Length: 118
Image 1 (cartoon, rainbow, N blue to C red):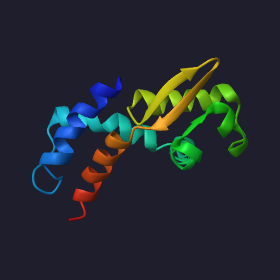
Image 2: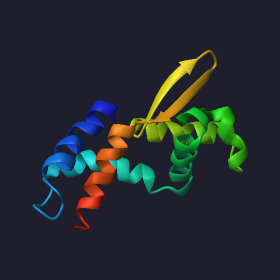
Image 3: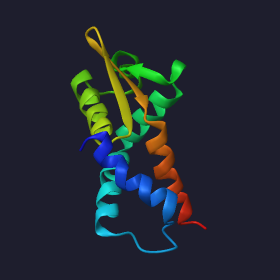
Image 4: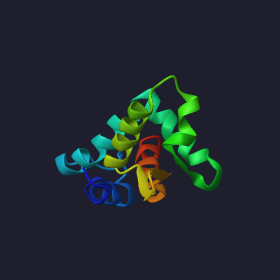
């Protein structure tokens, strides 16, 4: 799922209808689920945190390998899942791909989840 497909329903849900105000519609829920599934994996949750806390707010795979006992292709796969879910942005520089958190999307997801506690 592309970033625009993943974030469009989330934007509408997070800004306009807290979870406790009215039930999510099928399309709205379908837009949020890929992000939640991506974050439900401990490796991907840690990767998102590592990218967000990395100097300059961005990191490449080469910066993340030491934090895991996983191969570079496996780390790249998890980063791809986070990107496909709309949670990470990426930019290719030479042979490396640099990732940074898609802050607006993550903020909307956080607002949606936080609204359930109100």
